[in-house]
Length: 558
Image 1 (cartoon, rainbow, N blue to C red):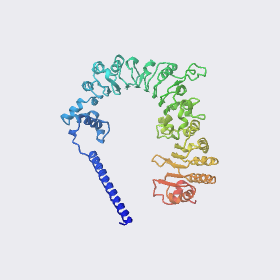
Image 2: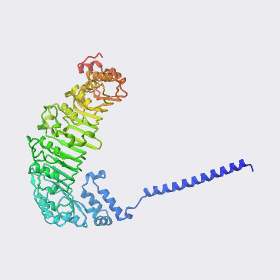
Image 3: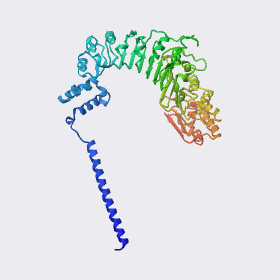
Image 4: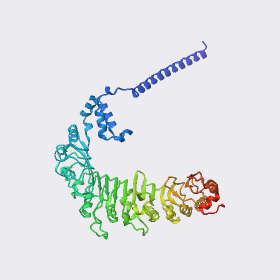
């Protein structure tokens, strides 16, 4: 036989064998995939499932707001629905301690007694939500099971029940209690006595409207301390001792508390100022709100928290006078970077001073941290009176973040209060800005004038956007467009162009915007890489350039 023919036969045979193996492998894989598909999509009869799987399914369905219809059901109603399906479901629920560890008490004590008895000695979480709790809840039921309580949350109990709860907490031993949260709804603060020996493993303490115990050992094991409208009747030095005794804190909230006051006229030789710096190595979340300037500054000056990634510093508006260079910086010590280590790591800044907002101030984020420096806006500022806040916030921005790698800046407020020098100062201090977004009201022509002043040696932003949301009322005018064009042309001479320019304006009373602004828009297109122009609320009544010009009180000849 010809060797060439033999070689061809061998090649054909090998090819058939290879195809056969591939076909068999394909069939095997398809069979495995079909098996997985049948397993995943199998229709299992729920009554054939083991008790453990049923319990997991029930717990999943009881999770708050897991399904839309749960918005109209209370936790107890969802629980009773499962109990009433059949005998087996009821048996599974009644014999599984996991269903009885999260106990919400709205009335009486029978439900609490039943749930605690079925916990089988496992740690229980109790929420007291009823104003008419029976005295026996605090005198017999809770003391009987105090050794298995893992958390107590009392947010809606009556003033008659509050003394009984506080007595129970002081007299009873709760060796497994990790979390305690109590809200005193009465207008007057109530004194609370808590013993460190009764709470050896307490990790989270949340109190609202109480006079606090001064025993520092009570707080030594805490990881989370949240205090709202509370008071310590102690000097500032002792308060700092308490903070120093809580090295494990990860979250500290002091919200409108009556803290010991830092003396306004204290100098560097004051015993208070010579207090050892407090080291809180694990503190990641910190909030102080509603305290005096001197108290806030004092606490920040003494607390050393290198891991503080989330911070909220909120002052009192009536203490802030719009005099001098800075506003919010007054809340911080002279070296704010030692108090808030991550100031120099944020990359995004929002400056907001709008009447419609609840707060005005500076919000910063980036590299895993979030921080805010704010003031509440009083009601009188939402009507007729309004002070020029933005210029002061800009100066704060420069002081606090001039060494941070800021790449994104958002400004919301009355832009008419800002000058080109204000903007130029920001651009010079934050040279890495790439993305700018503005919203609020007034004309932001000063932004472009300030940018034009800093064109030499400053590459400036690459992206610029005006807010097109419903609340934005930015002015549009010839002067604004001329400022934009002058700045774009000036920067073009240095080889600097915007990558994206997005403009959005309300034309409800501006008429034939297309023809009127055509010249401006076309000129801009040649100076930026991408241009987006959004016109909002076009009013067909003004359909001529003349009508539009009359409305704007400017010439119709461009």
